[in-house]
Image 1: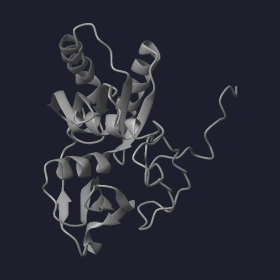
Image 2: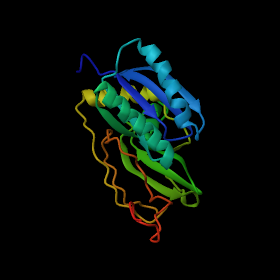
Image 3: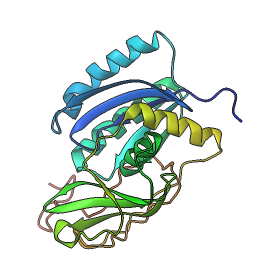
Length: 230
């Protein structure tokens, strides 16, 4: 058993809430959050200031950041912020699938008696989803699916928010158990297709790279001049 679990700072901007929290293995701690899916960049500094006041001069040993799935711009705010903190504090930064974080919180609260599915809004009449066992380990997904195709044979936890305090405590536990970050493979399926080809490792810790389950909506036109062209 790890007698001195790492203090982890968790950041998440994968959904409509910007949140930051602290925790150690078995000890979810301080957390702050702000509503507004288009305000991540505006509020994250203020939230971090509250966390710094709570830390009172101490520093976390690890930073965990929600890597999605989620909207393009929102994910990049949190990930860039976490990587910047990691460089400033010279500590490792790990990624967390945000659906995993929701699953961990529900198991920590003993809210799931069987295998279950977590879903979040993917917009365009679609959802992001993943399936979990009773210990909150992911056994399928994450994938993107049309809402019209939803027919899960397990309880569904829908549209919950990430609890950054619980995320931090769980990441601390995983690090103590020897888990290391794994890299997602980006091989795009057609936009919005079921069974996306993006390969997401089953392990709970990921590299701190944005998890997009569908190709970007915006592409560069073939008529656009190359950078540096006259």
